[in-house]
Amino acid sequence: MSGDEVFSAEFAQWIALAGNAVFEEPDRVTVSDQGGEIRYPVTVLPDGRWLVSRAERSGEDVPELRSLDRLDVERYLTVTIGSDLRSSRGYERIQFPSAVDEVAEPFQVVRLEGRWTGLVDGVSGVRRSVEMVDRTGHPIVKFSHYADVPLAQIRESFEAADGGVFRDGVERARRTTARAAARLAASEAELGS
Image (tube, rainbow, N blue to C red):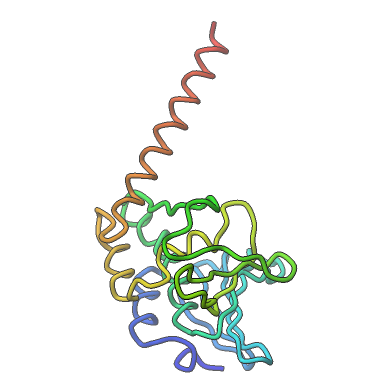
């Protein structure tokens, strides 16, 4: 499988900008950070769906996302890699809402088999093909906030210091960081007294 079969030319250029690389193997394409510490293998399942997994160091591949739409794969990887790009530039991170009750309009979260979750359009009732493994932080809720954002706009937003269309996510991260710092200060003060 080649990277050209899986990713658009724009995505391939962008991941290089973010310091990542694409490695091609006969049955999959892997996006990896510079040191190969974190890898995102992308394969095609027998039913035609794309599967994105995550692997750390020499660990096993752990499924993250599956979808019939290749653009869902690029959206997910762009946001995931975008966090590294922002960090390397000294920008504040973008924090997407992640609680089940924070799903973006018009979506609703649906439980599927096992630990998989999906999105249903609450107006039309149509289920999106994207599915994600549920865990702490509900990745499908995060995905709902960029599910319909054009890829170019996602890339531009992660490259912009202010977070572009995800400006609210930068503010959310600031509030979370401030709350954590206040809790730490309070606990240190309590220990010091």
